Length: 78
Picture (spheres, rainbow, N blue to C red):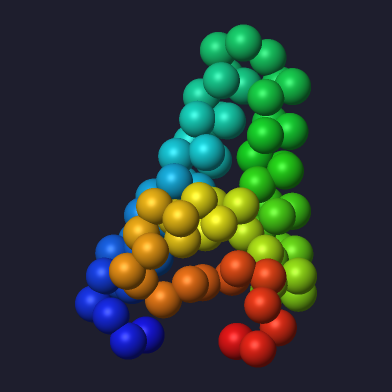
């Protein structure tokens, strides 16, 4: 990491993913268990992201924070 804002990007990523998990559990509790599939989809993407080097959240954050080091942008050179 070359930039101190890279740490901010990682924390924002973790916060977004955490909100997806908590939101999925809250929606499943209120409206039905089908919302658990949102958490399952997020978990599958997190498990596959080290292999594929692609994360949709980092893709968005890379565009919103161009002054930081690109993370998990699909590049195999990382």
